[in-house]
Image (cartoon, rainbow, N blue to C red; front, top):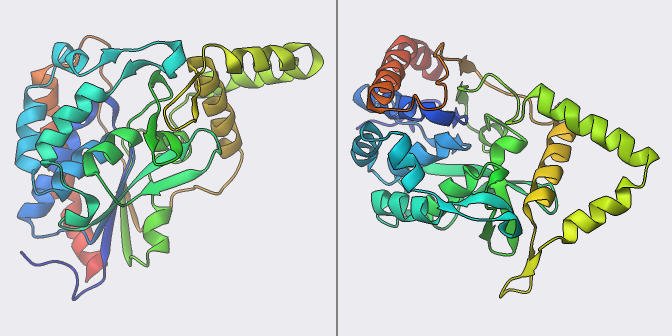
Amino acid sequence: METSKHKKTFGLALSGSGNRTSFYVGFLEELEKAELRPDYISASSGGSFVAAAYGAGRLNEMKRFMSDMDETKAMSLLTRAGIKSGGIYSLEKAYEELSGITQGANFEDAQIKMSFSAVDIESGELVNLCMGDLAKAALISCTLPGLFVPMKWGSRTLVDGGLLVMMPTDVLKKAGIDVVVGVNMRGTEHIFTEKQLTVKKIYNFFKKITFLDSFDNIIDNLGQEQGEDGIRTPNFFTVLGKSLDLAIQANSGDVNKNQCDLEIVPNIPKLKRGRLDKQANLRFYEMGRQSALENIPQIRNLIN
């Protein structure tokens, strides 16, 4: 297959996708058929899940996995956790499943250059994971704060990269990629809604004029446990509170604004809870194929 190495370099930035992740399977499948393999993929959240399989050369295996996905199977990949762990569910079973799909591949084994975005919940830094286990990095990027237990990567405690940047285009520009194509499945800057951020802003305001600062300290220390590495695991309330504050801060600046030569915003519906099923996954897969076919001519023009 031809790559773009003798033309302009071509990079894909994939946003989070929620319950529409199979869209990316169809999208990448059509790019492969058209011999448009990107030189670099940066991804966040659900985009990382599919990108990990693609980088390992296992897109067909991901296609089979997603074609059988429904609410029951999705819940079978989760393990109930608790507030001491920092989230409601653990992604350990999901890691075993994705690692089986990628066959334990590392970034260094990937067919193309890749990075998955995450956020250090302690420092508030945006972290681009680009070395080590593809499957683990992908799931770290999917770790929605409050819902899933934060994951360790070295000395860091990390959560979903969509907390600060939904579609990670900046890393591609910094890497010198000539043509950046972003696929924005969320239509929002960050993973939290405006209503959720507003509630936290109101809480922060009242915290300044009441005794709630000391209450925050009590909450932060509630049920925290020290791990084998000597690092305390933040609890559910701490993770959620810090995440909302980081999103508010990111929402007020221009640091992570999208930088695309082409931004693709698919016009696809959101599913209500309980509607995740095989038929829906097939529809989103076909939408991904169609979206790629519609945009391939423009991508070629940009590269050439």
